[in-house]
Image (cartoon, rainbow, N blue to C red; front, side, top):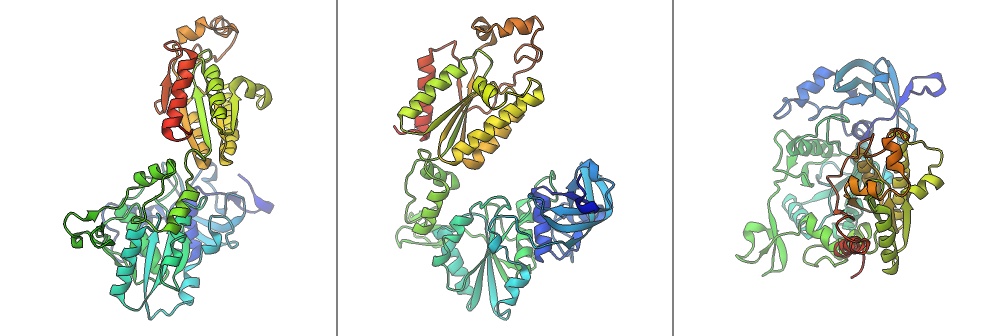
Length: 492
C-alpha cells in the first residue's frame, strides 16, 4: 500500500476495474462510481436487468485485503499515474474485498492503447447533428466484406444517417483495432472511430457475463455516444438483447452469393451458391502459413493489416520451451534442435537451464520461490527475443505447471509458444546422473530436489511429448524439427 504525498493510499485496479473506471470517466456510464453490494446484486441477478435501471451490468471494484479499511483510495493506471479518487462508502466481501463509492476524476487518462481515439461521449455528441440518426457499430473483430455489406445495408434502411464505429479493444493491447481501422476508407465519408474497452465481468475475479448481457452493455455504451441504432460486430454477438435503450439490429446470417458475386442475407442467395464467411480458425491458419486471404472474403487493406498483425509463423517469434527432469536429455535435444533451426535460416538463441543459472540467476537459491523467479526470467528474456522475430530455445526443468503457464502467457504476448515435454522416466534419468545429484538428493544433501524431495508436475498442455529412453538423440531432434516444420515455424 502506498500513500502519495501523505494522502490516501494508491491502488491500481485490475483489467475489469480499469475498464469500468474508463467508462465512468468517459461519461459513457451514468453512475457516480462503484456500486454497493445491494445495487450490484439487484443488477446482476439472472435474467434481464430491472426496468428503469440506469446501467445493465454490475460495476464493482475488487481490492486486496490490505485495503479493506480504506476510507479513500487514489485509483491509478498501471504506470502509477492518478486517474480518480474513490470516496469509500461501503466495504463488503464477495470472494474478495469489494469497495463502493463515488469516483472523482484526478487527471485525464494517458495510459491505454489507441488513447487518441478514446473520445468521451460528450466529444462525440457535441460534434454532430443529433437530429440525424446515428448507427453505431461496436466491433471487436475485423470488418470483412460481410460486415461491410451489412453496415451498408443498415445505412440504406436508415436513410440519411451518420456512422460511428466503436472499436472495442483492451486497455493494454490493440486487439483487432488495426484491422478494424483498415476498413475506414471503405466506409462512408465522415465515419468516425472511437476506442472503448468494454468490461466482461462485474469485477476482477468475477465470472464473465453472458453474451446477451455483454450485448446489452454495448448498446448502453453506444447510446451514451448518441447512437439511435446499434449493430454488433462482436465475437460475442447474439440476437438483439431485450431492454436495450436503442434499436439493436438483428444479427441475421449473411453469405457470399457466388452467382452474383456479392454479399447478401443468406436466404436471398441463389440455391447452391451461398458461401459462408471464413471462421477465425480458417483465417488464423492461412496467416500462420503465409497464405493470402481470398478477395471474396476480405478487402485488401484489411488483409494487409491482418498480415502485419499476424505474420506467418516462418517470420514470427517463437519460444520453444523444453521441460523435464534433470537428466531427461532436454538440454542435449534442445542443442540439436537449435542447430537445426539455425541451419534453416532463422535467428536462434539457446537459453539452457544450467547456463542461465550461472549468467542470469547466479544469486538465486533453489527454493521454490527462487526457482519460479528463475523460470520467469527465462520466460521474459525469451519473450523479448520472440518480440523481435527470433526463436528462443529454453531448456530448464520448470517443474511447476503454474509457472510454465505464466511463461506461456508472456511468450504469447510477443509471439508463439511451443512446449516440449521430455518425459524420460526418473529411473533412466537417475541412471544417467553424471553429476551425482540424485544420489546426493536421496542422501538428504540436496533439499527440494525435483523428482526426489520436490514434485515435478507433468504438463498436460504439451505440444509434443518425447522420451529419450525410447529413441535416440537424433530421432528426438528430428521429431521436434518435424513438428516445427509441420506447424510452419520452419520452412520445408
